[in-house]
Image 1 (cartoon, rainbow, N blue to C red):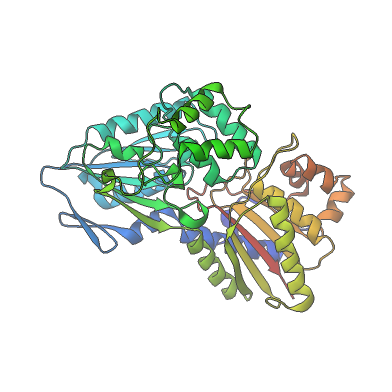
Image 2: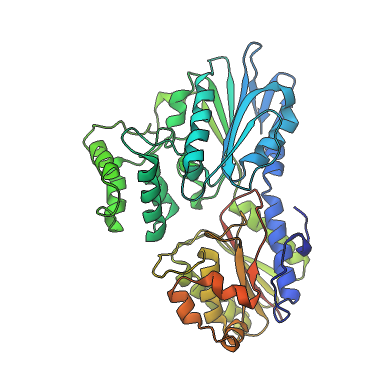
Length: 458
C-alpha cells in the first residue's frame, strides 16, 4: 500500500479534526499495513529453487509426477494467492481461493470464490465444497500449499452432518452479539464443521500439506486462526457447552446445534484431531505475519515522524469501551506527567476487543473504542486517538474505525449528539459520521486484528 496519508479515502473528515495529528496517524497506520501486506509476507517466506519449494530454510521437493495445488481461505487469501502465482506460474496445477466479498483480485491459475463474512452464507458452502473436492483429488506424490488468513472461519462453512447453514448462521449471530472472544467463537465453530479444527488434514489422502498463515488472533494460536483447518485442536465438545453456558446461550441456539454438541460429549460424534494425531505427520504450518510485525513497523514510522514510540501491548482484549478508558488514561498521564513516555508520544496497541450488544445501533468494536475514548479524552489538548481494523472493516459498516480527540465531545454537543446515549445504543458509526471522523480505507486485503494509535503532541 502507498505509504502516505492520501492513500486513504478521508473525504468525511471535518476541517476541525483534519490536522497534522490525523495525517500523522494515517501515515503510521499505513506503515503498519505495509508491513503485513500479504504479498510481501509471502515473498519474504516463499520461493522456488529448481524442483524445490522453499519456505524459510525448509525445502519441499516437488515430485516429478506430483502436482502442486494451491488453496486459500481468508480476507488476505486472494493477495497471498496472487503473490504465489507470480512465483510459481504454470507449476500450479489447480487451486481454489475463498475470500470475502470485495476482497478478490484477478488470478490466473486458481478459482477465486467470494463468500459472506462474518456470518457464513450459501456461497461459502459452495466454495468450501469446491475446495474439499479439489483436496480429495490429491495423492501421496502431491503437495498442497494452503494460504490462511483471518476471516477464514466464516468464509469456509462446511456444516457437520445434521446441522444446516441456517443453524450455523443463527449460532454465529448469537455468539457475535454475546461478547464472546474469537477463541471462544472458533472453539464452537470447530465442533460444528467438517473442515475446521484440523479436519481438512483428514481429506488430503496422504498428500503433503504446507500452510502459510497470516495471524489475526491474540497469541497467534494455530488452532484458532481461521478455526485451525490444518492444526491440531486441543478443545473439546465439553468446552463448547461450557462457553455457551457461560454466555447463557444454551437455550438460544438451534436445537440441532445443542444436540450435536451434547452427542459429542457422549462420544457419539467424532472429536477433532488432537495434538499427536498421526494425521499431522505430513503437515507443516508457518506463521508469516502478525500484529507484532505491524506494531513494530508503526513504531519505526512514528519515530521517523518525531514521536517517542511505545508499544503498550499486542494482546489488547476485553470490552472495547473498558479497554478504551484504560488506554486513554495512560495517554492523559503522558500529557500530565511525562510518564510512561513524555510527549511527543505515540502509544500503540494491537489486538481485538469485544462488544456486548445492548442497543440497536450501527457500529463496530473500533468505533466503539473511539467513542469511549472520546469521553475519556474530553478537554485534553493535542491528543488524538485512532482505532481501526487492519482489514479495513469494522463491524457491518464501510468504515475501518474512527478518530477521536479532546474536542470530539464539544463538537458532538454542538450537533445535539449525546456520547453517552450513542454508546449505550452501540451506535458509534452514526455518532462519528456527522462529525466527519470515520476512518474509511476500503479493503486492505490483509488482516492482523486491530491497531490503536494514541498521539500526544507537545
